[in-house]
Length: 226
Length: 226
Image (cartoon, rainbow over all chains, first blue to last red; front, side, top):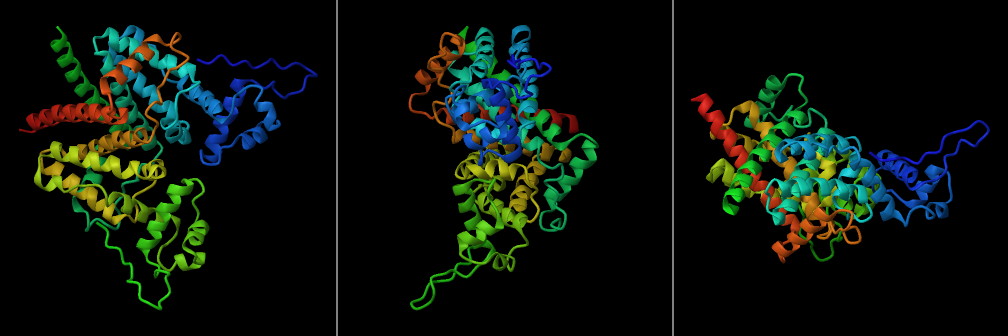
């Protein structure tokens, strides 16, 4: 988890926290959550923090560096600890669950962070380092490790978007006659899931299939290597 | 494919196309691509079309209806034809490839369409109807069909975001000592892929694994049902 360099408040001291890279990242994440990614600027961030834009540049290099800090904040919530103690596939299941939750909590970060370089996000790179090292130890060929991780991430990020979609997003009401198979499958899903959120069911279905498929691949490459 | 009701231009006629739901959707998609989803309003759309906002409402019910039209335009590019002629898993591969390309061509639509209801997007529902019908014919239990489709879609949409990310987004330059396993896997990937875009490699890796895992599941449910 992030160590946040937040000074203790004392009586008589101003209630304004001393600016740090971490506080700037936190404010940026709040601003993204409130206003979306398109309108995110350093000027608005400074306004939200009630400082001059120039004050930000004492702590960060610019917008890309702020986004790197946001990436670290979000990825701090992703649990990689299981990669130190469990087999790669069990660990990937734990990792995927916490990864989806971390991004679903901050919807505008999904598309933003999926399409920007990791540059400057050292804590995020350290997360990847733990995952990569565990997969190499488990016998995955090194050139396959990043493509495999990115594939699982793509599924997780798409699932994080689905998790914030309305539960009835596929509701075919009014079009049942035009799309009978779709409408029937929609009803069957409702009847089957009960109170389980549809996004959770889709995520578990996909994660199980993806990990089953990766186990098949892992077995194949290990046999080939031995 | 969409039939676009675009009138032929004649000499002496004004060059302004007659407004239709389809032309409004096309303009909305261009506006989304140019300005992103956050700033999308009916007023801006009217401005882009050089009409008064009230003119739009002769053809669409409002912003949600416009987005439904955008969804139809994007999903028109998704190839479901293989579901009529090939086994479900081969068809899903064709579908997934065209689906990823359709969304990667319009980055701001990924997060937008993944999180809004399908209401009003009849052509998109018809696409789902074809996929659902083929899966039911192939012996998938009806309650599992939508969760399975949504799982594959989540992977595709995440992969569409990855497809528009820079090829070197994982470049650990400057941090190699702090993340040695990650840096080494990054180099190994470059050496292995050559000119293949990393996003394509990750997509093929994930799609193969996901379909392998779904085939395992399909076999299991068919055995259970027989």
